Length: 111
Length: 113
Image (cartoon, rainbow over all chains, first blue to last red; front, side):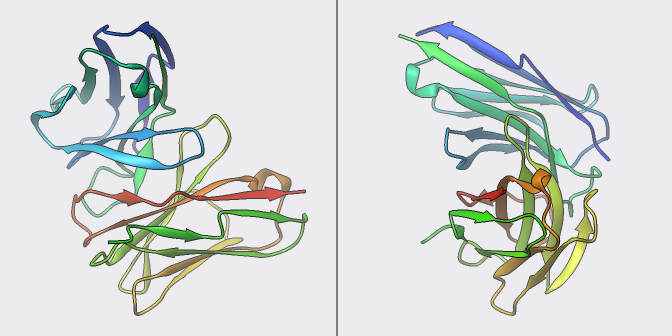
């Protein structure tokens, strides 16, 4: 089973700050997911990436397959970015897997 | 496009009872995965269904079972409920068994008393 570690667990920052959330996993993977969860439970998929870097608006995700590490960055953070950010990878590393999740990073952006 | 829909949204059951949760995948998706999320924790993989068969299973006891129908919708059944089964149950759908994007439902909040 793939093991996922996220850091930090909690992060409070001021509006406008650059945010970085890190994710490490134990088994080589086909792709990694970054997800956002708001209070009440709904999960939204932000990125799925298997190499390099992806950008969507103020969000940037990078992955280093050799080092088994990914980062999620938020530029010009805003209070509406406050949520739990979760990294997820295939349960056993393969492409035909359910996902195993990190415990999440609880992000609070203060005005 | 309705996305992934789960029912019910909230449910209260008594210890020892049985429960069935339902999931309709996003239009065009044929793979459904179920997850359990305890309060303050990340989701845990229960199992995945594709072509009406359980394809992969996480570390959950046999009290947790499922089914996928020909229209790709799915049910999660939990027998002999324990207090520790109280959690948010999430369903995710995707297309095929490859590394494709997963779309999540809003979840069913199960409380066992």
